[in-house]
Image 1 (cartoon, rainbow, N blue to C red):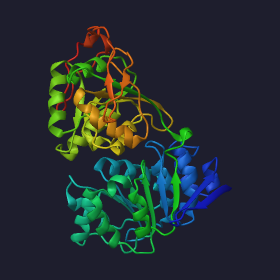
Image 2 (cartoon, helix red, strand yellow):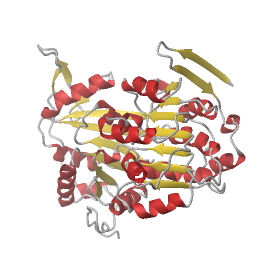
Image 3 (cartoon, rainbow, N blue to C red):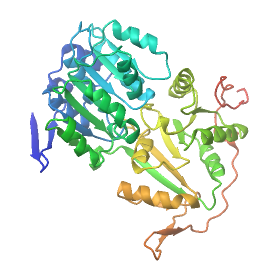
Length: 439
């Protein structure tokens, strides 16, 4: 088993393991059987790099692109380290969203199936009573969101003093200002000698501060910047002459696709309003935002995942934890606030070796924010008009680049119905189009 390691001035080691099959990890027979049932036989780069040091009980910071297999990277060592029959949880996975909690919990349930080990998923938006009951029955693994975990701690329903393995998934958002206090409370409730792993698609500068406070000489895996580990995503940036993005979005939705389309808006109100506009134009889609009840969110995601709903319009609630493999393209109707959120949004496509397309719509008012996002990404993405004409960069006196769209012909008018196959009437509770019945 080959590896190399270096140590930087602040004492964080960088280490990589090179393995080609899961059998080389010396995983238990039950885990190898679970992987076979999941039809997974070849480790991804983040799994090859992270699993060996985690099995060696070392702390770890793992950075890799979304869709690269981080859940199995921490989930396999977690499942191997837990023992059936323990009354108090020995493993805890903290995630920022309900959707990600469900995704991670589902994977872990598959890994421990038939072993006698138990897991529980806890998050807000659902009654806390059944979650407390599940914990009282005795579970070894807890997956939860920060707010609900703190609620359970405050009620005395959850004890974390036996946790040996702690994972912060999507750590860049987890330790943001909105979650930092809850995460601090959770960490304080766990033993200091626990094993800790932080996983994310991005690792901001504060990761080193966090590691110095909570991790012990962590192995650092940074794969996101390597070309051969980047997801296969084709970026298309359309600069519009006006702020009439609805017309541009309609044109894009009229294009035939073989997979799902995820459209990101900025606010809950904006997403609802855009959904109604598209409904009036005859498009079949669902909407996902934070004001929906958990059963409503579950139903929309279930239908989108099953392919019954071709388009999902969502706020950033879908930027993390939405693991739908058939998403063919992501459309940024509204820009996110940061380059990190941009990374997470576009990472909903091109997952697990699949190719994808990320489309961003820029109105005149979006250009300053887009320049800031590009600076955060560390690269400039070429822009074009909706007709495909390239846009040349124009220098500006104060150093801020301006662009001038090339003259292009008026886009041809398209018939929305001509590009789609027939769909039945949309189920109640989501925006839908009444399609003509097929002959």
